[in-house]
Image (cartoon, rainbow, N blue to C red; front, top):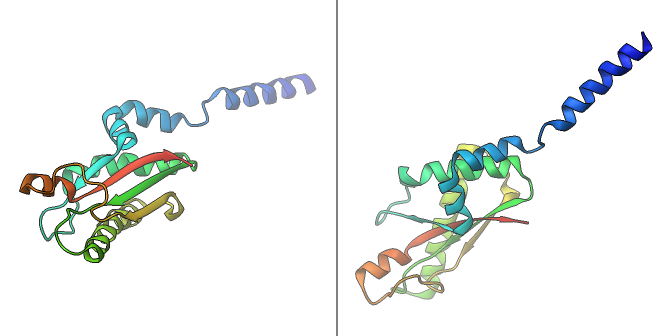
Length: 151
């Protein structure tokens, strides 16, 4: 009888250790490879003029980000706000941080992400991705970039 119980215990332990620890995270990465790649490379989120609403097109990637953060405590999400170069540096720095905090607050309120895994920065006009001399370039520079990294 002792050997039967010991055998059952060993079988149960073996079953527990053969299951991948982060199997849920892996399945998310396999289910949403485009969103994961976008997050690793830096997802740019654009806002409509004078709006603080996050557009629906960005919400699937933010949902994937939240699940990845919940599944792996070593992941952090850098949320960097950017502006174009019009206006004062002080105003642009404030606006860029406000936009970054909008994305952070969305993740906290919508998905209950651990706040210690979210790092917000307001970079103002210091990292343009397009020419600020054109209207199209200024639109591209008014963004929040969300990047998934390992601590």
